[in-house]
Image 1 (cartoon, rainbow, N blue to C red):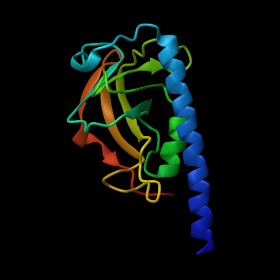
Image 2: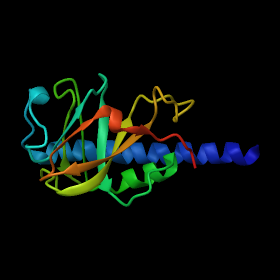
Image 3: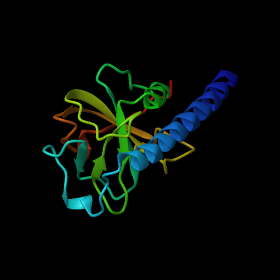
Image 4: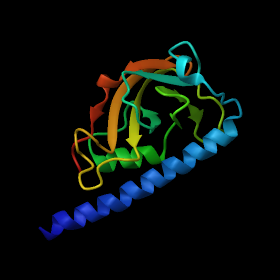
Length: 165
């Protein structure tokens, strides 16, 4: 039992670090990108570079992190570590709804990657007592095909990360 409590504590620390890093990255990318516009809720889709559109997205603010297709995202711990070194990321808000403007990790330029990638949706308001809660999880993941950084995917394609370790 002690080992389970120790693992849970370690996970909370790792998750907190990962979320903090992703939040800082998002804020940096948003200020570096320079071309973010208001009223993007109806724009985007697979034709617009650097734009991830998620259809059927429940009304909530999330972070989207794009990582390579070969990353292990099967556990909360592996997803948290993957989120620390993304290719790109961005967030949605009341103005953008289901559209995420994606920026390159270090430059803040619009992300224009092409090919299969994994996307991690990070919920800042997840159930802290149970981050694997199917109704309010910390992480959801999906494999997405991007063209010049643009893609449209259904929210139902995202699966809850339901294992801790």
